[in-house]
Length: 226
Image 1: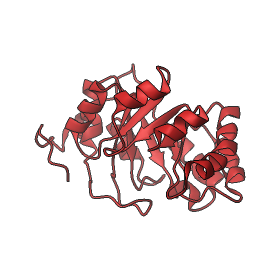
Image 2: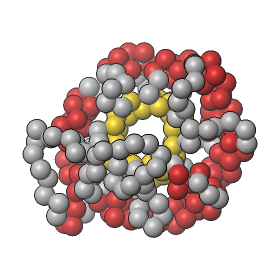
Image 3: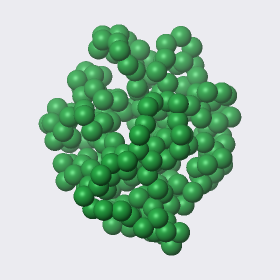
Image 4: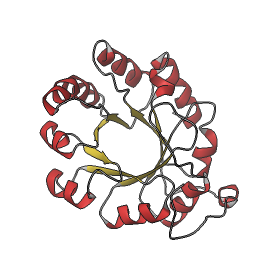
């Protein structure tokens, strides 16, 4: 758990939270598996055609930028044709090369201010904030467009050491206009408490790509009211 200078947050906060009418309904944010080659473009198209998806994050590891760009381009076209935001994980240079809709930064992936300077005023810049309200406030001050909290549940997608309570979503939504994303082990079976707590987006990966992607998106859409 991150040592948050703001101190602990009352875990009961979420129990009394009521989502403000001014905030749009929670939406689905897909994160790619590491392997996006082969038939994955067809799977992505099938997923996006199955229900409302707000954004798709392109996440690959240990490949050079030329290879990553070649993998990304057909996926970006699929997203563009369906008006789904295409977000690049970690790599500002790749996001700029692709003309992506935005970039998602981890705590060690650079300053949102530098990403903004590189990508321009309309880019969507997200920042991973784990379980830290302090990190989230810093990201907001640096010009991020959204903050991501997690992992809320156990996940096999990536190694995690942070396990926030849903109350952090309630606190953020009550205090700030900026959207927040819940991530980590989210499935149709466990998403509802995070939505109720105030998540503006739920970010999912294995719950969709680990099985029938169209069926999974439809199941999430039913929970989200889409």
